[in-house]
Image (cartoon, rainbow, N blue to C red; front, side, top):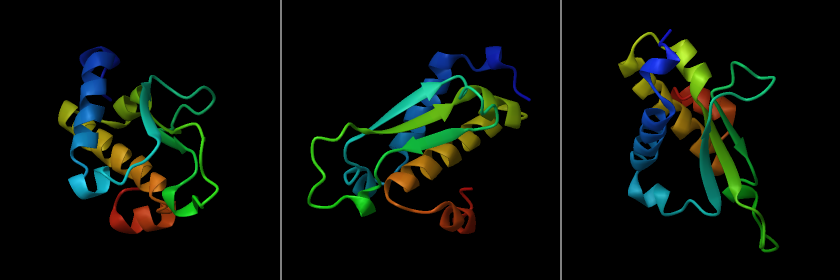
Length: 118
C-alpha cells in the first residue's frame, strides 16, 4: 500500500489530469457536459476507486437539455490502498479515469472488463 502522504492530493489531481489528457483527442472532443472531481473516499464505500453519475451520451435523446453536468469522481485513498508503488498509482489512476469516462460514452462494466479496464 502506498502511504497517502507520499501522494498528496495536489499530486494525485495532477495524475488524474494526465489520465484525462491521455484520452485520444477524437474521443475527448466528444465528451459533453461532464465534470471530473477528485475526492479522498466515497463515504460508506471504502473500496470504490471511481464513480460515474449521469446520463451516458448513448442515452441522451432530443429532449436532453438543461441538465446538470455528469459527474466523474476519482477516489484517492482506495487507489493508494490498492497500489504498492507510485508507478502502480499512475497506472491505476489511468485505468480508473478511462473506466469512468467510458461509462460517459455508454460502455458497460462487462465490456470494460473484456478490454482490461475493470
